[in-house]
Image 1 (tube, rainbow, N blue to C red):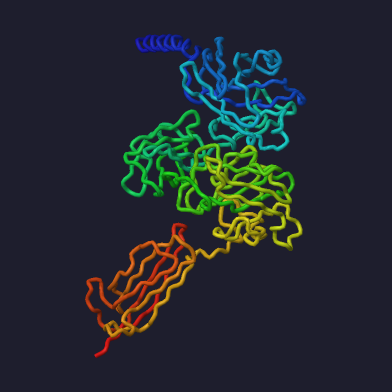
Image 2 (image 1 turned 90 degrees about the horizontal axis):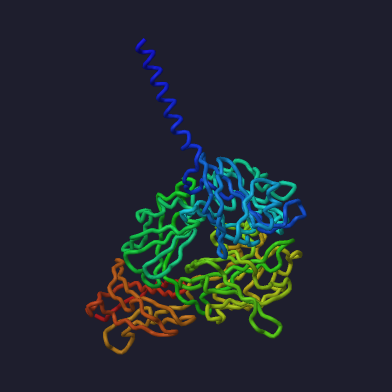
Length: 580
């Protein structure tokens, strides 16, 4: 009897406790990042398919909480809209947000709220950010035209929809144009909805420098901000420079600002390695986790060159221009522009090579095009990070044209007057065939320095060494010894060995070292000295301490190099003899 009464009391207590908790779960609760997400956008309205002719943004609550949206904000670079009314967004439900002028029309599709100051959605690219009432970023979508994944639908009249709402921060790979006959699904489950899990690790794309003590690492997708904020996740080499602070940049968290304990040195290339950082889906950074960094320098003529051009793409394709860093300097690409020329010879239509901060290192390539997806689908692209997408290249006519490469002062670094006659003469169909530079050191406008990209390379090599590259990368020069046998006895006859050298161009450094028969250095005649175009260095048969060396065969080794990275080595023998 006592046990039965005890069980009844316990049951009453549990029931009462549940009644106390019930109001808590039926009331709105605070939201954290990605509880509510942006799942559909309509940047380019057109009523031809059945949707109202007005922009909208769709939200979805993917949490298990009721979330009140009063005071929440939608923002882009130009405007901010605030939800002023109290509205409870229930779990797994949708909400359409739009201007008041189209709110009535959209209410026929689903639950709708109108706001003043609705952020105008740019057709080509925009970054829409969703904030809660406390000003915390809940979700952001940085879209561009490539997200449609459809060349017809990106021209208007179709929404872009998220595919998998469990992967809210993976970007372009998780969005595509609506497949609904009316052009979109405002307030309803997306027509493209499906499983599209993010199982790809984040990758370190490149870096750029803010100042001598500040480096910015750029990644291909949004990072988990807590793992990205640990300074221990970043290692710099050569030794002596360390990361003292790390700050992920909102709202995308694709960039991390790194504060250094020591200033960067000029004309030094460093390597940044990232470890133990995850993306917002929890994937640990993979093999693409190292990038170069260093202080940039101004580029002059011959430092940055035009290396490959596609000016007659096949079908409805896109032109591209490839540049090559032919120097030992680090180039700031946002300070470099491409321009055309009008009928009066004036430079026109100048566009920045990169709209974001990024660096090009010695010996590296960069490709500029209007559609990186088309380029990757039609040519072998070894690294998408080597492509800069621009909105509008200067005009590149199919028969002949002009292109200039400018520094940030508007001075010409390199320019080209190309012609379709520069193609290989036996090519019947030149559509889709790029022309490639043969030798970096030869003049840009020398017709014989250009030819068609090889068919075996897919008629183009965007972002890597040209298929027709045939330059002699060795330094050019001669080195002779006269006489080959000498006797340093002061009799006026062959008392010294004359080492004669001649360089093909100025700017070479060099060293001349004498070795004995056992391979030991006995005399350093020249040590990393700036060489003239032509000179003679004499050897009197003495060692480094001005003592006579024994008779025998000696090896003379000369090495020359320049700042373009060209190196050449010479090795000759000379016989030292004496009279007895």
